[in-house]
Length: 104
Image 1 (cartoon, rainbow, N blue to C red):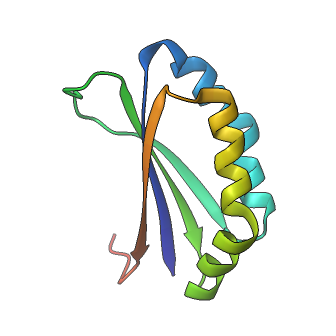
Image 2: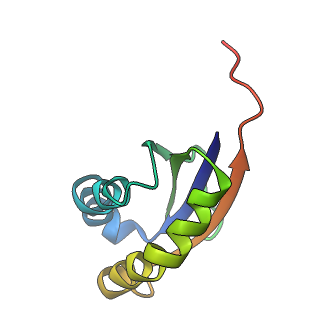
């Protein structure tokens, strides 16, 4: 299993609007692509020197080919939608992670 992690720092004045959009629109749209089996939305628990708040969304992915399929078919459109709504008010980076084991 793999995780597609998106870490985003947002300006404080858009926090509620951004969170609402993520919960009600963006994350459900990502899941509906069929590329992801689930998602976790988390707040990064550090004080940001540059200000704002930082969040991480972790999408579960079954295999590497699914990553490729997402990038080819959906990534540009998803990013365009975010930029139209929140341009200049956030910075984001993505990380692909391989799950090596679950320990409880």
